[in-house]
Length: 352
Image 1: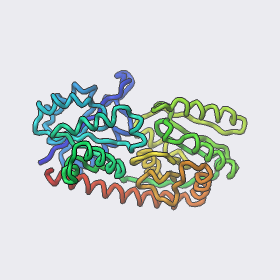
Image 2: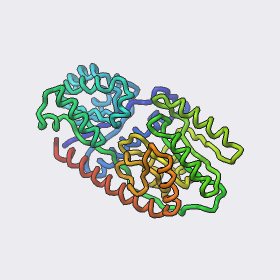
Image 3: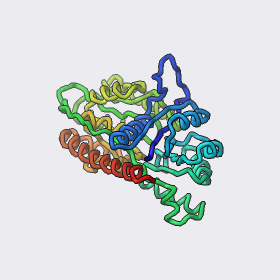
Image 4: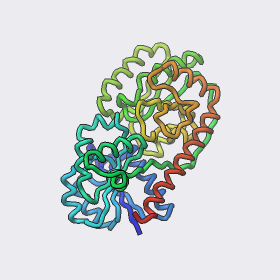
């Protein structure tokens, strides 16, 4: 019987005096934990651990005796597997990618490392998005001169899972302000600035002050200028009553409580593979403005991420149809994760 072990790397700035024992409060941790729990509930043996670095992997594999080790994201240097594959010759190692190619382009070592990983017999590549799956397959198949059959053995589609204990809540139009969130790490592909402009225009149209909520605790891939521009924008609109409200990264339960306080969530990004933040908002009954990059969001309420005007129009539609937005997104997310469960269960219950 297969036994799965997920291994994640602890964040670089871990501080034992303030952080939890896992040392990791990120979308990556949540993503892996959701799949781990889903596998266990489906009858697959699975565990998840967080380690400090490459040097802890051998100890955890020796302790858990897995048949498959899933390394979440690109953080293990390829040469480390020369040692690990020799120490654990019967283990299948899966490097699981969580990004589409536009985001991956900002990870300077990504293509090189993928090319090195697949030279090891027991290393497979897991990909959580169909387009990235096809692009990765194309690259590695050409590099290694694989047949389609060989490529399909080495590259696996492993989509995200999300728990479906969804809530609903009334859409509150009786406040003098509107709480709109654009949560997630601040980075250019998240498209915070254009969404802020659309939210401001929307708030003016419905005669409310905008409280625009963001996470400021994680700046990634040149996110600093984005944050500075957001602050500069709202600084000059302070006398109009509009506010930029920054929230530090927090634990999942606290974040869900924060999500539930929002009136509308915005996730009109340039690049996504799943968008856990959007799922968190919808799970709390908060209507969502997404983009077609989110694979489960209902297209009725998606906007063009290059057009603040389209975002504004969709915000107006959501304002009129908030309950329907939540209902349709719940339905689409249910469908997506049910398919995910089937894909993972088939792979690991099929004794591959």
